[in-house]
Length: 375
Image 1 (spheres, one colour):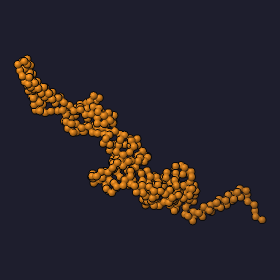
Image 2 (cartoon, rainbow, N blue to C red; image 1 turned 180 degrees about the horizontal axis):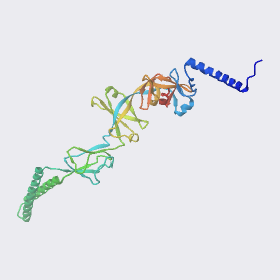
Image 3 (cartoon, helix red, strand yellow; image 1 turned 60 degrees about the horizontal axis):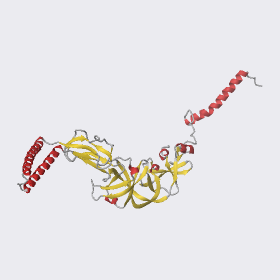
Image 4 (cartoon, rainbow, N blue to C red; image 1 turned 180 degrees about the vertical axis):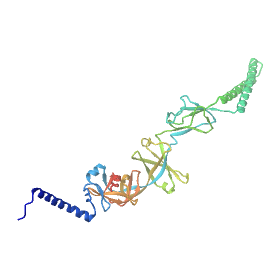
């Protein structure tokens, strides 16, 4: 029979055995993996990139990212290409105000207009007071003095002839009267030339687009002082470096303020400008009112030719690590797969996918950029 151990000794022995038993798994794990702690377990409901390249995105994360999808449909769409364009004024709704002669600027009845100020057609904007040279001005004044002296003598002669009307032929009196009238008109012309000033008026109703005027400024003949435009009647001018692009044009689309603005094709020039063929388009006044004269734009010009494919928002297109254009196709309620595609522009907001997708597939159209960043 074994001797009974004291109670205190028995408790110490039991505690030591329990500690050794708990340490055995940890020691075995540290010995096998040469690590002091096990790796943390991955969460099963967090967004992550799967080994095959697809992305697992739970429903709560989809709502948080604002993810939206759309079902693709096959269709025929106009073939389009992109061109650089500039906002120009309608030649019938704008004009330039130029000085007809060299002189000094003077303010109009309402002062000099500022840029952006509304003006009416025919409104006086400024005056140009001619500046004549000393010799020219002296010559005009000398000619004026000679005419005044000749007029005075002609008037005296006419008065004497009229006093002798009973003994003088009527034709002599009429000749004297004609000479007085001629000298009077010549004096008026000389006087108007000395005090003449050019009046600058607004050619159309609109706003002042540009102004280079100050009181007392010296301007040359044919120098532009103001430019007046009607902001409700813009034209869009695009440059086509391939003349073949000007053939068979049906219209154009302009991406502006988050919307696609349709443009009407006016015509193509028949002469090159800097090796490019100008194309002119016009649109609705309300949709183009926010544009500025000379603003650079990108147009999506479409022809009458058709291309088959699926219409898709431009925001759905992303780039992968190989710099390929991809879209994210929804393959399961919480799984999306990348798909390389080929596309052609349509209207600046949407594109037409020609290769890589099929009708009936559901593609991420909103939030695709955030989905593409999941790793």
